[in-house]
Length: 222
Image: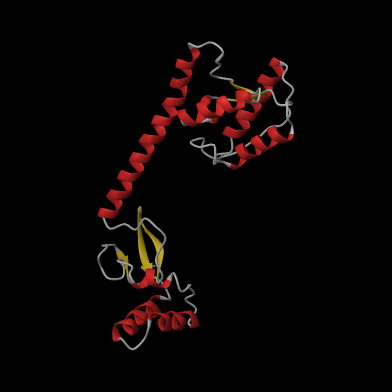
């Protein structure tokens, strides 16, 4: 989807395959969501189309099994569900006749391989995130008073125009002369908008009290 070729290629192959097989194409669904789950917009539309056209859909065709699903258990459950509706699923590049018991072993291989790849990617992402945090990089959305900033390849924080207001809000809280709600309303009047429920997250955020080490630019280096 990012490079603009994959989806068009898949649709072209599926169209030619259906023409050769003499399939009547009722509708083509295109999406750029990962197939690691069936909770994706276009798949929801497919199921809605099936319900709205009972008995009309006989087959769902896709390029490879990892385009159908990247989760073995979910895939097998969906296949059984579709089978009860009289609908078969078919891969162009990895064809399998699922009425043959032995082919279920090959199906498990096709489904497990992308699932393993997903799991490995998740582990690598978590490890990279932990390493980045240890090196003082900021991995999430910047808290109030900061904005996200790229220091070369590293993600860090830079103070924004609301930083002085956040500092003063802490000073007001520390003085004991103001309640949390009074400080929140004061911040709100200064343009730092937040709900009553969200304000406690600011005054308890460990970033502000130095328990989380980050590489911070106090002034914009530019």
